Length: 94
Image 1 (cartoon, rainbow, N blue to C red):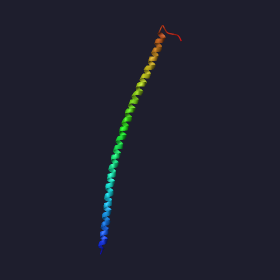
Image 2 (cartoon, rainbow, N blue to C red):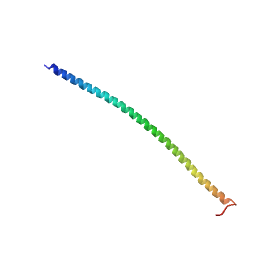
Image 3 (cartoon, rainbow, N blue to C red):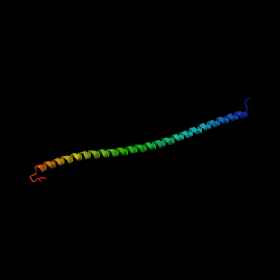
Image 4 (tube, rainbow, N blue to C red):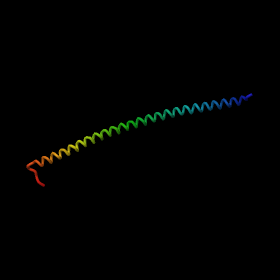
């Protein structure tokens, strides 16, 4: 016959193992939840920064386009001024 003390020790050992496994499962689940929350927060921050950079790039590109047009207008106006100066009867010779 199996000794009663041995059965109690085996049962206690099994209960300890089950309790340890359950505790680890609960801790791992909670840790995963915390990591998921952190990752969502980080993802949100990254998306906000990307949106900010996108806005800055759009503003920069608009500025570049305006400057390109302004430079073209400056060159065109300079050419007009030279043409007017050539046609002017009061033109001063340098």
